[in-house]
Image (tube, rainbow, N blue to C red):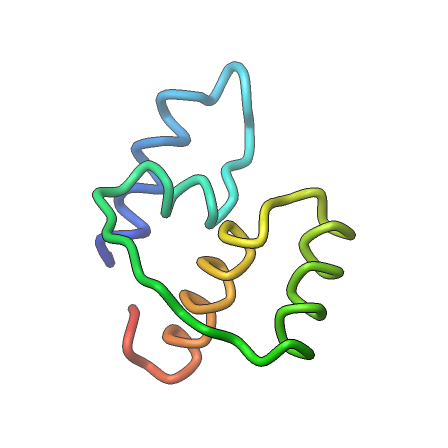
Length: 78
């Protein structure tokens, strides 16, 4: 079981009565993390802002999710 999956299960157990499902963004925020500074082209940033607004989340939360998903799909995160 991967580190993120283990963390997700632990968070689900802690919050089971209040919040039955935990998002990948919540798992990422709960984990020990580091900050990265990325410069995006204007068009990409606009798309990120629009998608984040549509999903009701912050740009950084959506970016974290997208990076994690990209790494999972490329086999770097398991």
